[in-house]
Image (tube, rainbow, N blue to C red; front, top):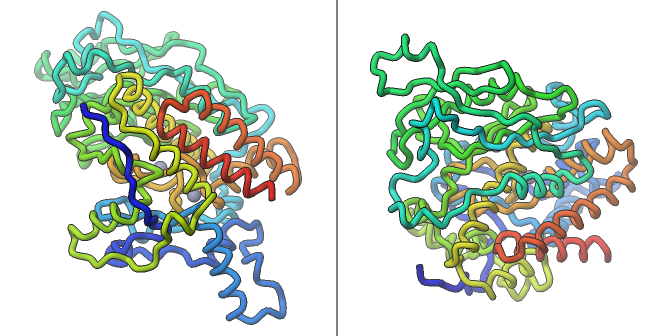
Length: 454
Ligand SMILES: [Zn+2]
Ligand SMILES: [Zn+2]
């Protein structure tokens, strides 16, 4: 693969693309976004005695100042919000009062990471299910699946101060004995068992509809198994999978899913395999942070015959902002052409989804306020355009759960926690700076910490 430099365009799109209107999505306005970060649910700029007009103007100005750090959700054609423009916003206040929400407590605060189940000889037919069928074998041999250790380290930084541990027992795939009676054809391996200790759960499998993998496993069954194995001290558990997954008859595949109320989630690395990127039409030049390139967004909207949006900021007006710093870092890099680079790219995608799915276990819903790690996504192409950070609304939720509900800190302690968490993630990113997403995330955080210090 030839190496190509990242996007060099200057104009940034800090609002939703013009497609948002077409899709019927109305982003919560500046005042609503500010209000969405507060406990009271009120706009902090709306003090008594100020006119509605003044409040609106102040909110607008505050939002403009924030946008080069936290731009709006891009909303390009075929993005999740295009299909679900009515997705309800979850403010900090509505999250706080969510009855179903599991708070971290001193007896239940650990985040467990369960490594991908081992394929035992009895189900040898499953070997190779993790390999994309569309790529030649010799092209696949140098790829290394994302490491469970690195995943754990990332979550340790992202959910800073919570204990993150490996699930102690290995899980394994074994034959499901009933299946031989139930399945008509012996060659159709309809069921496998997922085993640990003396237990075994039945997992449905099916042929992969789009043929990108040989077969895939049912994620609802995996999540049922995860509920069974959940340790007593677990706040939640994430099950790592290297096999392709599906949810039901209506979907082709699914990369991650959480039963937030039940404290479990599952994330599959299969579809993030870089060998599938050309099929998915992934534009290496415009993954986050350069996904906010205006020319790129306009280009995708123009396909749908829309006029470019006028309100934009050139990169020169956003000097020193976190987004600008992130873009500067990747502009100097080239698209990953080495094996190490592509393996890093693979891991970075999985890391982002792990943090997202565990966010659901903290009761956090999909984010519609900003571009954010908690945005819903309609597929890999949208995934890689979304940022790894939490927006101001979602960050309040995580910080409140850990710093206030668990550690009993006040507002000042919470603000200190936010900075410490940023430093922990920046440290992770420093160790992974050979991967563009982490190099950019590290730069974004340094920019953000600089803003918080002045
Ligand atoms: Zn989600
Ligand atoms: Zn958010």
